[in-house]
Image: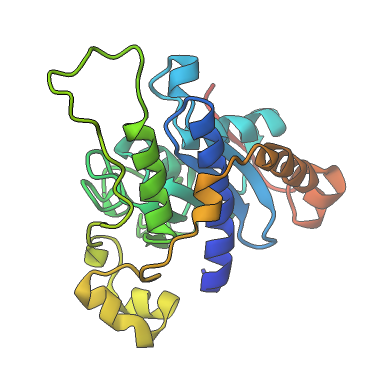
Length: 268
């Protein structure tokens, strides 16, 4: 995957805006977009929906998969051409689902310390038990091409912090009266080697930035795009819908070969 860093940032900004929208509607601020790596078109998007749906599996990635299923009448054959941009590392369940669909490239913001399935807790991408589809280009090695962490990581962390400091009116009263304070200044180090090797890091971020890899520091330094994460993003839904419609238009689909290959059935 030869996308420049600026492209990774651009797509992650869309995912962060969706996550902010989720936060403003009572959901955990995690969101993703599915991008066709050949055309740059937005295939699908998803936001966490576990609170609204009362379904524990309604993670952003599954919502995005369902959206594809609805667009393509339950069939789709281009998963290996998709790059998933997700604000938080996929959990083990989602990482497994993405791999079994044949998705080879996952880019995320911050790690998932408790349930991360792409390096933090388990590395499903390198797991021999979780199989890529037989017709995928990497089926022999059973390895996904790239798991790339740390893209706008601090923004993703801050959205989670916004969520956890908000008052939950249905929660029991705490034993202490100490209020949670929002930490805007300190961030944990990122252990890059859990996710990518130094050669891959240098290819993506540039050899001049190799010190960030060794020192386990954020590639974007101290900067945070507060505008994206502090402001409402209600417009992002209309934009995402328009982009998905454009991608799924018949003449557009035909131009990139969708409809000319064997389909795989998505299990309802």
